[in-house]
Image (tube, rainbow over all chains, first blue to last red):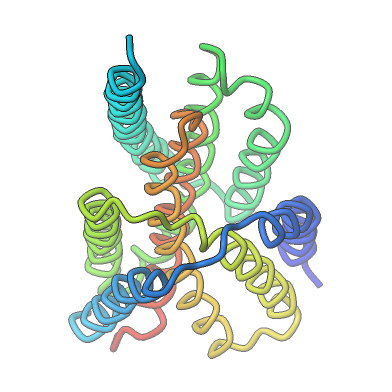
Length: 59
Length: 222
């Protein structure tokens, strides 16, 4: 195993360790979505997915 | 001042504060993106070795975790932001060099660059014009990021190209969600800090660019 793999694994592990408490806190404290909220978020993200597919076809 | 006058005055002052945070964030973001691109160009010009990416991103993460929280409310926070974005830009050098060496490398890099810009401007414009509150997405986005990190960690050892492609696709969707979430925070959170918001938006843009490079590189005909 080369040093790049070990280094990458250590960096990702550090990110997980630092992100875990924040993610747990956010899951507890995030406000509940109201009806229609998710729709308002998913539509632009789906547009991004479509745009990326277009870029893939273009290249 | 009666209660109505007070409410109107407070709303106007809130709106001014929001506009100030948005203006400062986008001004600083533009400057840091330019600086980051400059550092990436320097890194490509002097042909930095592949390890540079890991060391630069690692260094930038240490600054984000340990230095930024202590300096975000002071003038030195600006220097830290340039340090973070400069390091991350410099780390991109070996990655860009690898893609530029492909037969259609310049097209891949150009498309990823332009595509990232369109995605960021489109999502920011959407969040700013609709003024929707995306704070409900916070828990989902952070949990999703954790899942992606576990997947990326596993793939270092599994080395599955299809899984790598799937991770990049999920990262683009998550970072798009983070752009909506952060832009909405600038509008709806009264105490949002433009230094922190700049770093947060920069990280989303950086991750979208790197993931797009990977997707376009893997799916390219050449």
